[in-house]
Every structure is written in structure tokens, then in C-alpha cells.
Length: 55
Image: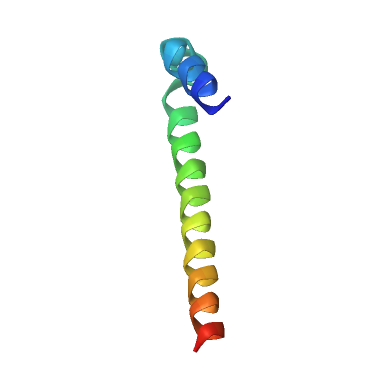
């Protein structure tokens, strides 16, 4: 499913960029960056808590 979704986005990347224009692309990039940062912080916190529980 993930592979198919990535393929669709890459296949229609030009059309998506034309629809979003430059400001939409920047906004989408920033939102994706924030989501990625939030996932990274959550993984770090989960790892730290798991480590502290074992000690």
C-alpha cells in the first residue's frame, strides 16, 4: 500500500506541484518536516523510557 501511494505521488508530482504552486509546496514541506520531527521525538522518548524501566 505504501509503495503504491509513493508511486502515485511520484507519478503525478508535476501535476501536484502545478496545483499547489510554490507557496503550497513550501507549506506542505514544512508540515511534513514537523510531522517527521514529532515522530522522531516520540521515538526518542519511548526509547529513553524503555531504557529507564530496565535500569
